[in-house]
Image (cartoon, rainbow, N blue to C red; front, top):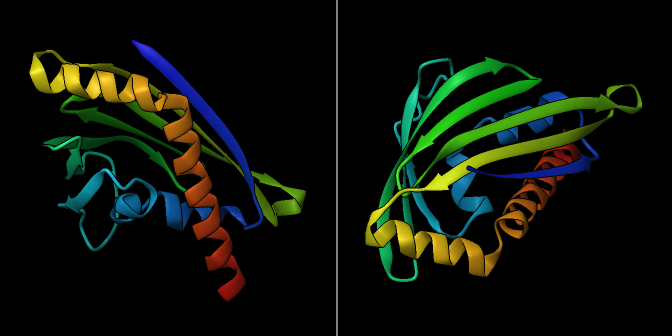
Length: 152
């Protein structure tokens, strides 16, 4: 298994950041390879919820399944992912400056599965750099949360 981690400080309170990062429907905003997300209930996430992501990259279309394993709003989440990539995504939120700002941390443990699609995904991950992809996603989350905070 490979592990990548990223941390970013956000000029928004933890609850605002949580509302952004704990909504899988935002995934296409953070990663252009995610075409759509299906199955997220309107009431939001809770332990045991499963949802589907439709992916496209390098001419390949694939589907991934995610299942919420642990959820402690607005501090922590753990989601298992299955598809071209099997792994676990953990997210932590830590209040900073008396709760006006937030440190967002992600830890992703993953491995690519076999077959031609898995090999293509592994090559793409290696070419694009998994740490850079995670950092870009966290920066997109930061921008979105700061815009949401400025509207409040």
